[in-house]
Image 1: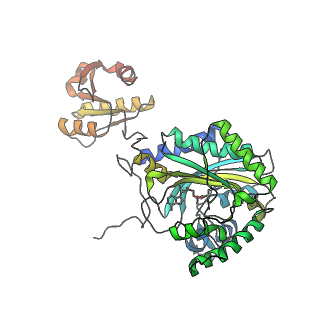
Image 2: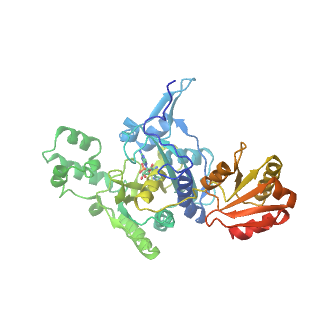
Image 3: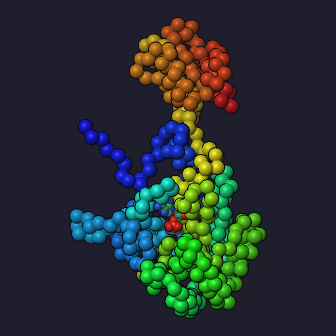
Length: 423
Ligand code: HAM
């Protein structure tokens, strides 16, 4: 019979060494979340699908994410819903809906989980992607921008990642960006650009600055840059963010041509880029979004946040040869030789688990050889070997699976012996 495959561009993670190792996946998700928890961000768990209009209005109709990549469908009640392509719009919706912005500000929230974009699958670009994100809402303070950036930086470094750089810029705000856009438009339309690029310039002139084609790069080499046209206030904001990052020891480079794929960004904007990943080099990104909440019907409050790619961070760690997570399923593996011994091993394993030790045992009446093989495969450091004769003598064999040495321990002292051996 024909079998099934996961949908195209959708990765599975499962136990076992290798690129799909689920213990490494969990370690990355946890490692990226930890710094946020240390900084007082509370967990928010949000729906996987939302009203389609939320993303259209929040993320922006002209973005690729909304215009080309959304998984949208009508539910059985005829409502158009969309699998969330990103997290910020949903967080804003929940903050407004539950008045989370009515207490002490900033409201600090973190989340993790799957997001969905109908992109062309390739290495590091998935249709179901996993992110860890944070949003800090309600205070427009450059120190908060620096905090958010430093949290992301600490997450990557805490996992042992080193081969990445942080790029930052300021995209201005509505006091200076409209004028700059006009200036850039004029500049772009004075160039001999091809039809498709002109059309892009029409929709969002800033995107043309991010074009990777050498001929376009050359033509736009002297394009006016937002950073040179910031209002005094946004320029001061950006300078303060940089001062804070310097003081925190977070290294960065300024990339005045950075363009993000979502429309809500204002002022500070950033991306973490890893060079070991090929084309899909963005391992995380974010920025300020001062108009988003009002645009979604809430108070006119500012916000800043990031989304870090769990899948890509995992790939980046692998590219650097850094292993994270614990492939071993358990620390201790019970091997019973005989029926009566099996009852004893079941009890022993339960005692170890109750004491917080990860323990498993061989099932299905295998012989000594098969059971020891299972013990090795489990990744355990110790095996407890019990035969019917050991049982009569009231002892258990405690075998160190890395050295092969075995000692006999009175049954009542197994827990203490295991605890001592595991350290
Ligand atoms: P984003 O830059 O679209 O931002 O995505 C954040 C990260 O998710 C990317 O840097 C990348 O690591 C990962 N990612 C995105 N698309 C894919 C994909 N197709 N396959 C694998 N990984 C992917 C956001 O989503 C914003 N909501 C971040 C944010 C929060 N800004 C402010 N607050």
